[in-house]
Length: 504
Image (tube, one colour):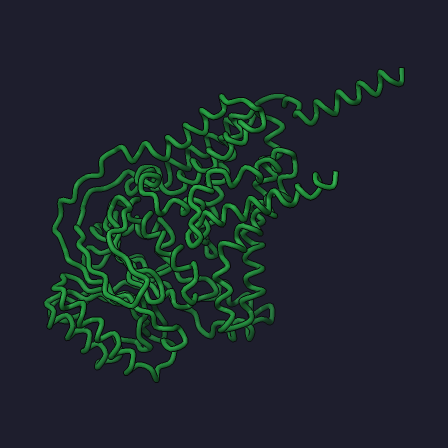
């Protein structure tokens, strides 16, 4: 009895820890195919809400542990982290509650499909709104296995999550019923993951470009201090000279890599323009900018003569990192000074703009969401370039998780993907999700990319087909009419009948 009581807590906690171990940074990739089985056991036993909460706490607290590296800037990060974990775990508890109720009303196959659709739909919903977050999505576990991620080009990344949960749910049915026939469901889920890799990716047919990607390891504390500008400019200048020596068509610098508003600082802008002229290359870089008193995070493109030809403003700033959601409401509650101490001013979101010179440029946090890159590709982008500053997180597992998203954005849109990072992973990813070049060091990554104009099914239709499939699956799983008694209910009824027979 004691073990049974403890197992009700240990199983979902262990399930969350196993799932986190499969994610980028720990990379126990294929653990994800069995990690959810203990959680599904507890949900099936009727303890769905508690099991979901415990799983969520273990999973998110482990996988998002890198958030705590921000403690060096403010101790408010600790209570903020706790609130974030609770915020993310609660919906998993609600899903567990729904699945536990549904378990008593439908058979094993329909329940397994409902669990797969439910978890995938939850990940999609979690990415929406001002507090949306895509980190800790289960599909990220396969970022190192290109043959398992091609489904994203057809149905999007959340279909991969559905297939992962489907494998777990059918394997749980095998163990629960001791019936090998349910293994066919697990095999079908694996086939859903693998079969799209058998469809050939259209060959590169556009123009070829040689890119030189600047990767740096400047500590965030140093980057925030304007007194370091001369030293950092010289440091990046040396990297730029190495990049130009490779005869590139495009040089990419990281996000806001200097403690300066480059567009408002003529000497710094002149130095970057010189890189473009001397190398006969285009230069792409990230910088903060102030316009009419508003602060923006933008990407700027210089042509081969060093002139500014286009820029893109970040449209999805980081909540509580680059802006305070509902700042006015906090002020009404008397917490305005606290929010000001946490973040004195908000970054202004950019307008809906076309790609710059056919380059999609999601900035940092934006690359973690499928929609931004997809929208820019739909508007004519032939290449995707992300600039980011991951030095906030002190060389933690965040840099692995962030680069993992590059694989999926490339596959979803069948575009070459470039990422230039300070304190993160810089590299080049092919349209099939293969990393062709990368580094974690302060270096210059050189690679070849191709401009592509083909349109994938996901670029064309987005998440709509997958969402319709998830919704239809859940509707089918809900039985019509009177529900059949659960196994637990049947056992209880049998015990009551035996007790009555004994009394008579």
